Figure 1 (tube, rainbow, N blue to C red):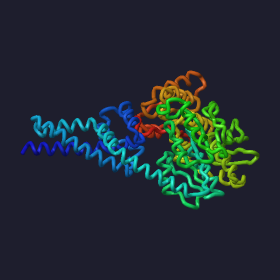
Figure 2: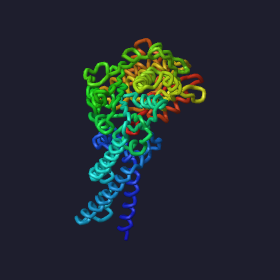
Figure 3: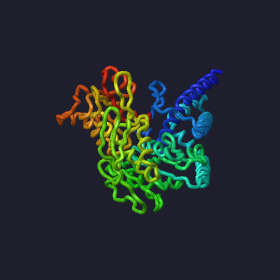
Figure 4: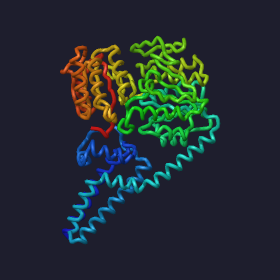
Length: 498
């Protein structure tokens, strides 16, 4: 009797702990794009063996909660069934070998908890054929719907950064003349585009703007094979996701998969001010190419000026005003205007749309918080965009300039170097630096100290602070900020990095 009670208690404890671990591990697998190699790298390099145990007692609010999609639900069922089968099979084997049932359950349960991530990956392998079949059906259904939509103008937008803002600005401007559909939020993967087509595309739409993201070669080509764009915008090329791309050259080739996919009568719109584009010698020449910029290009903004109320500039003699700040936003607007001009939107319509552009949340989003100003650039995760944001922080009117940042991730061998550069730039632009997260702390601090030693810094060693997470940093900020100050939130790492 005692053995049965002990066995029941052990089984209940195992089920409880498994139920605590699984949602956390599913969330991390989802944030790693359901890619086993990325999930495995995260497990080995970021959180190691006992993360799930630590997570039981960690009450830090999650930044990206688990989305209980149909795929996650299927994976959950398979993982639970596989775990129970392994527990039953392992316990039966040990009992057959002479072990008592409580000890067999204890050993097998402990082993399964330790390798729970392996069980999840195995369940994912078992589900793979079904998932591929479902994806193929959705893909073909979207392809059929597109083929039936005659005369649809498809515009692809990609870039290491700036693609979401460019997409949103282009949507607002083209909507002055056309019924326009755009991929929502961060729906910039093939499946995101498929879902947009199946759920949102209607016969009334004349223009479809497709944001195209990529983390490895072929990602953009895959989307182009589905939607067949006739106009493409490459907003920038920079050292993002170097861990998966391997080199800047691979990033360049991947972003320009969009231009390669255009027909010969198509139009490619590329950022002449982006160093990663300017240095690329493989820009396709089979279609028309328009280069835009602030400093160079065929289609450029001139007489640019900034104030606390926004920005003003001219394009080909037409004056524009927007409440958006920063050179990066001006570049995104120019790209949108280049395409709008191609599609016959009048100068007056463009002026009206640009004047009414809304800030994109978490992308140089300026707002008042009590008696100080916040520049929210939390979605930015690239060196070039961060440098532009720091220039805005430096130049905007206000009291103390305060920077909160965790630095950059997924830059491979360049990560430490770029974080040091960020620290040096921060020394010249900010009065207070709060380094959030331990991952890049040493590199950012080293760069900031180099900037201080250069002798032209606003920072001092006494105004550099370090906190392990954003909640701790926010508490510190509340004790440092004064009325009239300006606070820049530059980048925010997902839950997969600590």
